[in-house]
Image 1 (tube, rainbow, N blue to C red):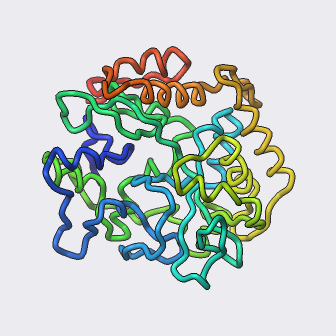
Image 2 (cartoon, rainbow, N blue to C red; image 1 turned 90 degrees about the horizontal axis):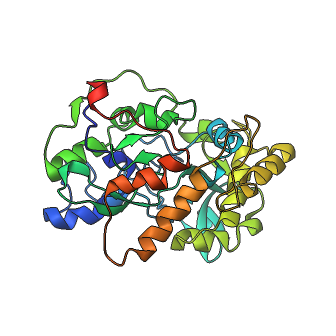
Image 3 (cartoon, rainbow, N blue to C red; image 1 turned 180 degrees about the vertical axis):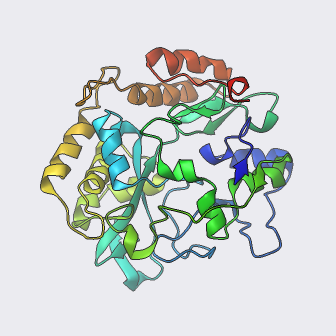
Length: 330
């Protein structure tokens, strides 16, 4: 497998708003590929995938949700980076196939609402695909707007799902983001589609407790589910599902009380606006202040878009790792 990522990062942001500029949505490949842009990379975690269109709709509208494993969730919490984490719930296929919370019938396992935990996407000024001017797009918290490179690539926190992309899509015979970018704006992104046997897919029952988490008390999600569907989750809202994810046990529905309480402390310990959080490794967390700053700048922008270089002040000056640029990698 070989991909050309320079100037792209289509898998790290929601770029649907750019489709109007290009006149139409990406087309499928004539072999049953997905045409609905909402469903890109939306493999149903309750089935074996096999390129099928998901039968359960996510409540949120993140088009490139990166599902983290239990260990990755714990890793971000221990690094003082709990504020990057957010849950994803799904609507049940049938009313009698789920659990009712906040007027939503949620997909569930053994009567427990099921969910993923992934990475947040604050608005950032970016210019992917060779755009002459930057635009505000929901962008992964770890993406450097200036180089369109991941700030934690090669770090121990870099998610397995990101490292494998787009291998999992290819293995499940799904359309990749690389191909959608090619179909929409041109260029060559997926250079070689040959791939090894994928590792870490975690589909079906093997995902339970490892990547697919199940909340044992649906009533604790009241209010949270409604705000998740509206895109209005608060830090306190995110704390409950993230703590359950961190307390989960791969292959079972068991929840560790100790890990649950520890995770809640880690999440709520990131609350201060620009105060550093000292985890076991005494590493300061820059992510919370960065997310809040981008959100504030977007609200105050009044239609204007700053240069991506403002990321130096927003991210790098707060301690975000710098990215090498593409010349270094050639």
